[in-house]
Length: 206
Ligand code: 5GP
Image 1 (cartoon, rainbow, N blue to C red):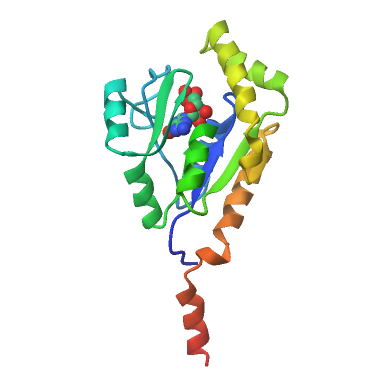
Image 2 (cartoon, helix red, strand yellow):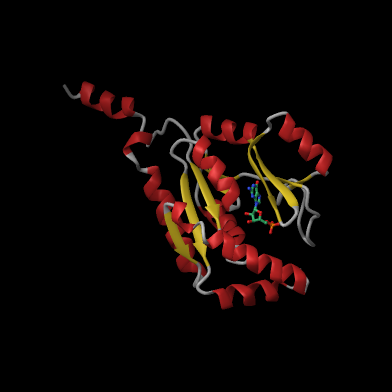
């Protein structure tokens, strides 16, 4: 089915809810869906690759990109800056490619006012205890960092009501299937369909 533009799926979650793994799995398994690579001033974690996980840039470079209006949205998270390239996002959407933005709730609020008809999904951990356990198991952060992330997690969850869909990540396969269902259903919305396709069909059968 032909569509006129690509869709923007904004996916947020408290850190440790499994959002990045879910986003990666869904872009691997659905066609015509890509993941926007954000710019960040934070240091790469072990195993992270520049240009695949993030574009890792200096704060100076990031600030000059803000001044140049290069970001569709940007935010400060855990004392680091993160932003989505406006050019990449516009380019995908006009080419009819669906894009996932794995961004925090501050960024989601900006997209809500700037991108018409973006779809907002929030990934929830099954409980606060499980979230904390997952953060500890990650072993990449020290105790102070875990406390900071837990506090921020609660702040993020408080914004849940602005999202269109809530997906509980208790069981990964089930969460992935729910995420897939939302994306597939949103793709079938009437306003996205190239109407000339149906109108043409009607004309030729008159
Ligand atoms: P992390 O440092 O753990 O990779 O990401 C920390 C938080 O920053 C996550 O909630 C992630 O979704 C968010 N984030 C990543 N990229 C962006 C971005 O481009 N914009 C905004 N607003 N948040 C982002």
